[in-house]
Image 1 (cartoon, helix red, strand yellow):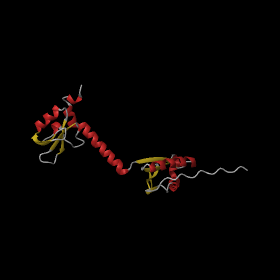
Image 2 (spheres, one colour; image 1 turned 45 degrees about the horizontal axis):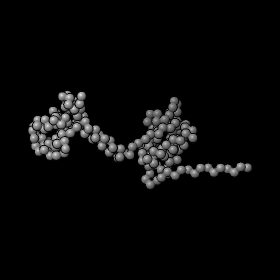
Image 3 (cartoon, one colour; image 1 turned 180 degrees about the vertical axis):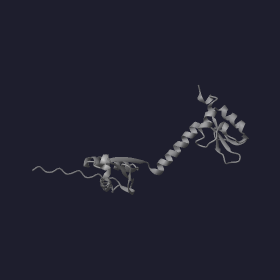
Image 4 (tube, rainbow, N blue to C red; image 1 turned 135 degrees about the vertical axis):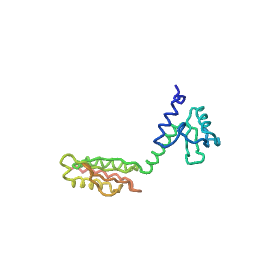
Length: 201
């Protein structure tokens, strides 16, 4: 059964649109609306009942897209698809603005080879344009030695100064001490040279 033809469709859409503050179908209060058809054509000012009938004929929704206009502007469309596209645009916009953020966690007593492994991950995230939150977590009584966490963060930050810049100072939050770093513009990751093999005696 086509869900568009279901009589309860308009009622469900009207309820679901409350969070978005968009009036649709029977929730539209104006007596007349300036109507835009499903094909984008201007259909002029018509009674809201007539606009709703046209939407029903196409198994679509009547959506109020400009409530402040006089009369309000409504468009015939698939409201579920419209809402999905709007949320996707908003999400993509936030992603472009923030650049995204990744988190890398390390222990306050992490071994040297593990630090190198974590640092490599941080560098890869930075190269892709992400901000990176570096967090040191304290286990058990390690929380009594926050200086160990600070030393660990300083050690990691020192190893990525060629590609990253910290946003502020490290902060202790519960059992975590963290700092966020951002990519330095124009700085590319240069791999460390491999050690030369020693000549046999």
